[in-house]
Each structure stands twice: as structure tokens, then as C-alpha cells.
Image (cartoon, rainbow, N blue to C red):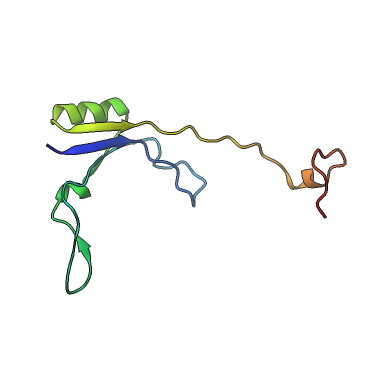
Length: 103
């Protein structure tokens, strides 16, 4: 019986946009260990389910698909993004700064 995880991917660290973070993904877990090719040293596996990555509009659709097909699953809820206070460059030179000058 295959097992999978259902999650919503996080924002890419090298990009500022939120593309491809709204969909829910179903990824199958590794069922057999990876083996190393003795000649070339490449890592491979005979488990084809590791390459399957299904996307869904909502979490409920992904859970319904997993239960309908007899897949054991675990749902990982997304973490809330940290909202940072934006500061301008000119705030470093204000006369009413709360932090002392360091130079």
C-alpha cells in the first residue's frame, strides 16, 4: 500500500513572487532504498512512484483522491508567512532614532 504526503509548497527563496504556491501537491514516499550504480556512481531507484507528483486545487481534492485510491496519506499544513515591517533607507538617518549610532 503506497503512502504519500499532501502539502502546499513554500515560496521559492530566490524569487519574490508567489507563483506555484497556491496548489496542493501529493507526493509519494520512498518505498525502496536508492542504489548506486557501481560503474558510473549514479544514484537510482526502481520505485517509479517517487517520480509522481500530483497537483490539486484544494486540500480536500487531494485527500479525496488519496482515500478513493487507497493511499495512506499525511497532510502537512503550510506555515504562516512572517510579515516584516518595511523600513526605508532614510530611516537610518532620522534624528529620533530609538537605537544608538554604531559608528
